[in-house]
Every structure is written in C-alpha cells, then in structure tokens.
Length: 471
Image (cartoon, rainbow, N blue to C red; front, side):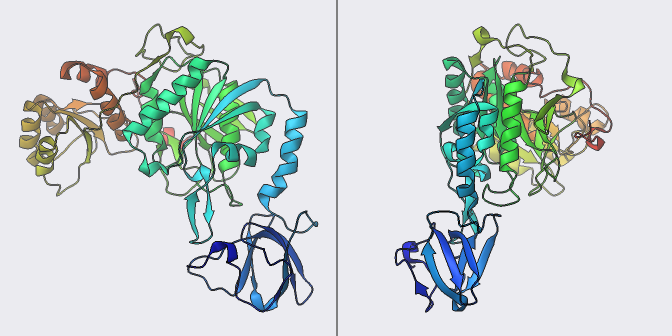
C-alpha cells in the first residue's frame, strides 16, 4: 500500500510544491485555465491513481483527471474559490468567541458514533475520527447558546458498546452532576444502540437535577446532508431551556431541517436504518420540539409532579433535586431477548438456562403470545429460577395476556407481562434490575413498577399518525 503522505495521482503534471499531501489546502490549475481550491483528499483504496480529488466548500467532492491538471500547490489562504468546510468555519468560530457571552454551561461528553465520524477517503466508508472538542469546533453556533465543556470518553460505534459502557457513561455523568455548574449534559452517541443507552441511563440515574440529552446523527459531519449540526443545536437548546430533568434523545423530527424532536429515554426507538427522522417516540408524543432555535414543550407533559423518592411513577420532573440524586449504575448482562417466530426451536430456552441467563425477555406476537410448544421449556426455566417476561414485537400498543387462552396459560406458568414497555427498554431494565435487586421476588416487583416512564397507564389509539412538528 502506498504511503498516504505521497498519495497523489500518477501523472505528468507539474507539482509546484513537492510536499503536497492529502489534507492540505491546495490550488489546482488545469491546462484549460480553470482553477479550483479545496482539500486534497486521499484516493479510495479501490480507485485508480489518475485523478485529483478535492473536497470543496459545498462539502461535495470534485474529481479532476490527472491528464487535465497543470499544477497543484499548497494554499495558505482562501482565494475566493472553493475551500474546505472546516476551514470556512474557523473565522465564524472566532466571531462567536468574541461576541457571545453565553449564560449557561453544559458538558458535552463524546462517546463516538456517526456524529463523531467522517468519511475515510481510503475506503469510501465512515470511520470514527472526531473528538468532542472537534464536534464543538465544527458547530460554532453552539457558543451562541451555551458555554461548552467538552469531555472525550471514547470513540466507539454504538454497536460495539456493552452494558459495562453504560456503567462508565452513567458514572461520568454523575461526576459532572455532582461537580455542579452545569445546566445540562449532552452525550454524543452512535444511533444504532442509542435508545438502549438512553434507557440504561434512565434507570441508572435517579432524580437527576438537570437534563441529560443523547444526540447522534444519521450522516457523518463532513457530508453536506449531515444532520449532526442541527441535532447538536437542538440538544443544546433543550438541555438549557427545558423545565424537565431526566434522560432524553434529541434527533431530527422530519427528513428536512425543520425541527428536532426530544424523546423520553425509555419511550423512543430507532425505526429507520438511514432516514434523518429515524427516531420516534412510541405510544406518546416527544416531550418537546426545537424549531427555529425555539423550544416548544408539548402540552401533554406540562403537568408534572416532583418525586419524593426514587422509582416515582412520574420520573420526568420540573424541578431539580440535587440532594436526592442517586446513581445505581450496575448492569447484569445475563439477560436474553428472544424474538418469537413460527418455527423457532423451544430448545433455545433450555440453552439460555444452561448457559447462565438469569432472565429472558420474550418478544411475543400480538398481545404477548408464543406457540404452545414452548410451554414445557418455559415451565422448566421458571422452575429453575429464571425469570421470564413478555413484551410485544408490535411497535405500538401493549401486551394483554388475559384476552386469549394462550396468554392466560403463560401467566399461569409464571410469565410476567410488561404492559407497553418496548422490548429494547425491557431487556435493558432487566439487566439493571437483576444487578440491583436482592432476589427474584424483588426483581419482579421492580420490573412491574414504572421507574422512568417506561410504562404508561393507557395507550393512545393513533399516536403514530400525529405530526409532531406542527405549531
């Protein structure tokens, strides 16, 4: 493989500066007299060596055939041509630093993901590259709203995160909360498992005195269609202006740059692989929206009660309780989530028992069902001390295992229905409960109790049809 420092196209054009290398701001002059300025990019590993590739001010890449290039030289300043997006942001960043004196201070904790990534031009893929400080520098408008204290934890795609990472993040947030002075905490995170982490933090952090907002992006920050900047702005505005505390996710509310939706950490799910509005609140509205830099609180959440102890039925509160803040950040990963489907082998239950699972969350059909051929293995598992809980694989709605014989018989076996808890939240809660309960009886009680708005008393009929962005 060629050294990237010398990864310039094979051609006979004159190099005005022999030290030009990928990442430099350069001026390219063609034989026809056209002039272009931008960032010299490395080749894709699978592409030929006969093109010069520049990243222009617009964020798009421009490929120029080597045979048409007359000269390539470094540029120390903008010639009024196309230049790099990051370079363009630098003078604006200085303006914010000089002219804006934000009142509020927030912590920005970096954990990785697409929002902390950029395109790897050797492969054409996206690679983790940006620290929390670099994210902040790339969105200088953040300084208009808050003073940012960037804190880099790690740079991992969210599919690589494990329960012990939730513990690390929760403990770092607790340090920030106890240090005082922060109006809110924003956590940059990959989108694939962001709703799992949001649920984990919701259970681990009790009586938060300030908002904790997870934010990510569906498209890397150096792409012209990136949602990173607007998501970060929305998360920051919500964290400093929200009257509520707790754990939330802030992401695009539509495919356009219309508004940001702020979701409860236990009531949100990623419902699309790539759309910018991939995240949706399940069976309730987002708690707030940010549109045109203005926070709008949804009326359904205006009436809130202040909890007098942990595990209150209404965990979203309107006043901080610094003296009651508690952290229970342990998680037991010996919990299994099983999605039932026709043809699934019942021996899977026996295998999970044999390999040490302490609890199994079933993602059943409809109101909470699995085939009768599973009943013997479920009975054996429960008799051996393994807890088995039931959720529904339907996105909206709740379990109701008393409607049909199948559900009633499962209850008789000892299967515990989890109301309208999403399967993702349920498996995270089970990991937390198994690590923080003394016995199975207490674990069952905790799983059935509404701790962080993961359970609703009633389910709406057509919540998914509501337009969250309307005024």
